[in-house]
Length: 397
Picture (cartoon, rainbow, N blue to C red):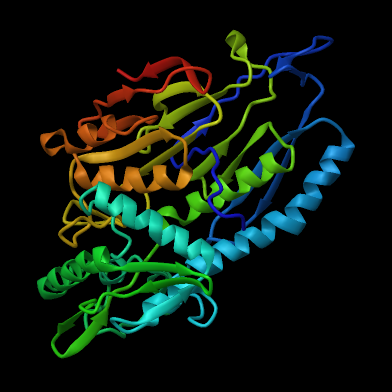
């Protein structure tokens, strides 16, 4: 994997509304190229990240189609496997870098691969920028609240001291909530090192907590950015190999748009029609034409459960409890899928109070945001302009 690749993306609760009109006998030019004869090709796999990864590319001829098939088999699928193995906290500790880090003792120096090193580096940056609202060190809290893989199987049985018979109907004990929140705060003490021998991370010496005699070490869960990283990498690879038209979707929550080769209404050459969808009532909150850009959506609409009318989701707040800040979804338009994923997670945690989420997003350069509050009255801010984000904004009243 090449170092510091960049790409363009969009994600979760987003719909591509490609309004195609007849192009019979007419040329259609995008970026100086006649694409009227280009055809769409879609390649998918469910083998990684427990979700669908789809590459949707417009190709000029059979030769390009065959080249895309070869790229998919020879480079994209191995890349997906590499990223998943590197970032998964559930893989064999000997094989996966993040799993090795999680298994290490406080103060231990852990060898990483380049993918994990860059991912932790990005996480530390966003953690500091957001004053801890984005924090990948909530792995213990995620397990405490029942959002890890072991709770998905029919054969689940309590194994940890903090486990409940049914974690989706019974709340955890406060002592574990506060202890794991304290543990997550240790993430800022992680140190990265890079030298001629490779990439390393050092766990902080105080990276553990003790509850009723049991020690719990600092652990990372990078689900908040892993799919975005994969989408960024795939999109960059497509561009490097000469494919300019189409988009990438990893799990439907990380999408990468390049340019659109389908003829659109309204003269929106090369642009995709993107909508932020209402997860509860259908329809859309917001629509825009755009290309060559990342859009990510985070919220409490998926991977959640309710107890006594309160929604508990997989996004953990600074207090170690699933966030409840009044934000249903946060969507961000920007230059990186992984960063958009991280920032939208942080915006959910920041929430409505004192306008923290909106104030943070408005200060991001080259980003635009859509915040949907529980009042269903969206706050809209778009600070991008030009060829990559233009056309119209349609907001549901």
